Length: 526
Image (spheres, rainbow, N blue to C red):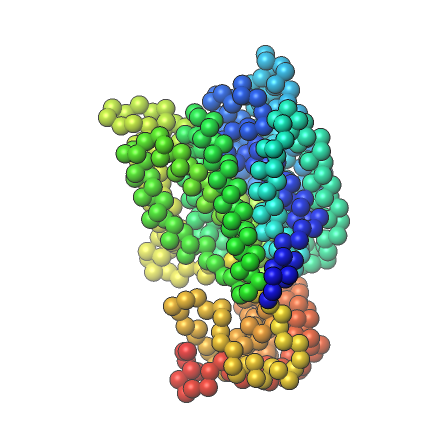
């Protein structure tokens, strides 16, 4: 892997640059608690409160409505999202511009702008998520992460343009650009994939399993959203804090995205959202405990740090939702609607709760102390339910939480003669540090080697092992709780990656690989 390959990973395309433009503009109106490109008179606390209250509630409501729509009426919901995203988004910005000139209508226009932008931004997020999920995992994840990186660059570049120009540049130039980009790219989506052909009501069990798998990660990311919402409420009183929060959030997104892109060129990246939350939780709750003692300057840094972590978590959320749609063959709007609905609803709860806490007068307690107490109480509950809640407490088995998976971009061996030697010598690289892989038998070991050699995802590896063991499509679908069409889709991808055309060729390929270990004790553990 040389520098040229790394630089090639940062080459933008229409998808990544269009998504970057959307994120940069959306950050200007939704991420930091301020309007950095609008006149200062619109940055009064009561204006900011009503805008973000309406925008946040409408935004979260759209996600929950998308769940119902995609489950009961997948076809009409798809057309509705495509046709009614750009218009509300533009109307929202025009309302904000109008409020600059119509003082008597300022508050109604700001509220209307928040509602329209909430609808439009939710629609655009779903369109981009659908596009990323429809692509293969390499292309989809790369476009999403690269777009996140360039969004930060574009956001900071917007500050180099005079404010009076930027106000009109966003709705008249940038918004039509990314709307056109997503419109053109959406026409190239293969709607013959199982995730789009699937009728949710006919496969209720598949969707129920998808929700169970994603519930705990959603609560964990939502906990960060709750904390970010609490601090967002405090940021409204001081627009300068909001600008600082915005800048640090975008900076954190840039650093994380660049780190992922570089690391991905060398090795597979697998992250478990629940495990990450266990690491972050003590840090976050300690941060809130210190809030009453360290005061205003510390609150600024805490708000910025929480929003930065929240921004990174949102990127991981989108990757995991796209991965879930590919693995389960579930409608990407449904999956993203559920995950995003939980996360953004908790963010709204934090924003409303933080506003009420800041206005609550309790003798002997400052507003910061009230916020810290509320945050600690709510975080405790979120941690409890995020770790399985009463199900785990009663020792019932919890659903397995899937990892966020970026399979190494190094090219597999192309010739079959190399397979035998590679199977004997190369170590397992996808096992988390401190853990050892557990194998059922020789086939499990051979499948693990093939997964590493040919860059198969975890779900593709599961399907391949079931095929090699002679199970039918119906049986595989039942055991993995996915539809039969999804099994067939994974089978096609496996055959293409392994360059085989028949089941017997797949079995022969597996037999050509030596087990992972040759010692006598490795049949149980290594």
